[in-house]
Amino acid sequence: MLSTVSVSPSGFTYRSFRDNLAQHMSQQEVSALQALGEDFFVLVDEIAWSLFETRQKDHLLLELSSQEFLWETQVFVNRFLRNCVDNPRELPLFCRELRDSLVNDEFQDHFEALLEQSYQEHFYLPESESALLV
Image (cartoon, rainbow, N blue to C red):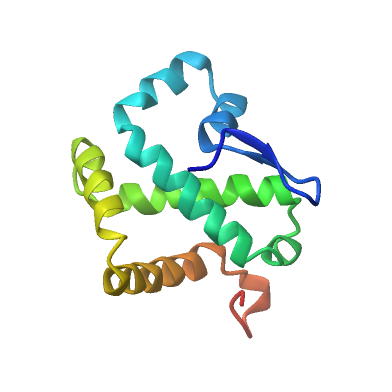
């Protein structure tokens, strides 16, 4: 699991989703989000970091700093996970089951394909209609 704040060899400071939320919301609002469960926050951090590492150059196309791109990636994963359930109360159980299921290679491949499609749709740049982010 990623620590809440860590510095990579390149000097980039990784901030967890919770830390980034604290910069955008009041402490009371952040505390209320604890109802989403620990698995939700772990998934957002792990999936967003994986996307961030594999899609590092996308921030240049999107004209975002690395820190802004990490935040946008975390927001994307947050929405992606929330859209996977019909009822917000189902989210903690869904996230627990998703974490358990991601150890299965076949399931992980299917999940990553869905995530990639959603990523493309979320970060598609209308002014560059000839191509999606690659």
